[in-house]
Image (cartoon, one colour):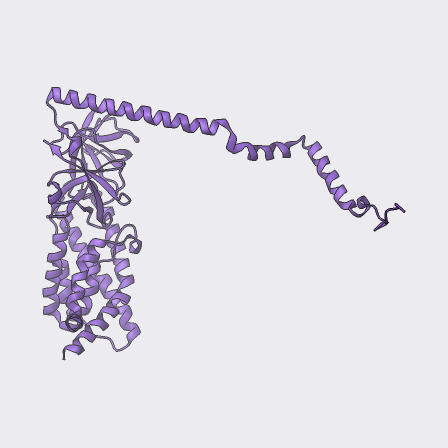
Length: 248
Length: 172
């Protein structure tokens, strides 16, 4: 009466022999590989929860903040010392942010046009910097725009400072992306990778504006050494710039 | 307004040359160099209106473009005047396909001429013992400009020529 009606005479494990065999093979593989499969799987599953990643971000953020505070302190210190020594300075309060509305960074003409002009207080001779450092000088202003001669223009000639060897030089645009640094001393020990900034002796630029690094050194001429400079600020990709008003 | 626009199509298009020159679309460039835009307009204009008109508008173009560039010491006027005069002496070709390729060749030559004249001015100005440094980028500029101008000229010049002819017919 209570007998259960058997649907099939076959046992389930008889039907799924191949599954059992596959599981057995997998376990053998796990045994032989000493659980490496599981370990690797655990590696990927647990990766988002690792303490190291998160910790690294916090540390980097803290380091950034520390550098920012240090930079501000040094800037203030520098400004104070320059005031004491009555040296040339650029006022931070008079920076003007501008957008690049026209760009000629190839061909013969090396210039950019900005969306701020004389109406916004831009004057001829103002310095234009972008992310990375110096881009050029304002050559011409209209009511709403200002035209900037880039450092790469053949018209551009600026006094620069090579910090490692403590020497002044002249940065001359050649019409390509790498202006030439001319050092009027054939014994100058300039090396690839040397950092070039604006010269403290320059009457056109405020000092210590980053410009570029030495990319290659040309052959020494009669009384001077020349080198190609890779600019830190890339004018062909920069969209936003700062116009610095220089007090000379 | 529409009537004026169609009648003066050539003059209206003239206004766009400095705008394109300033726009400097990078996606059409090669090594950061652009085709020499004014020649695309100057060739059809000079072919239709003759050498003297070409020369005069070459001067006008030179004056406008010089005012847009910051290099006070160098000018594009001699090259454009010469090209305007030269283009005015070129006759139309009966075969349309050959005519198209001619535009490319003529504009390439014009671009080479303008580029060389500009380069000579730079060379003359910076005539010092280090002037060899500016030779390589200048050659690169000239060659890239010649290639691009010749490459795009068949398209732009034939379209502008058709436009100018169309606006001329309306005038009569």
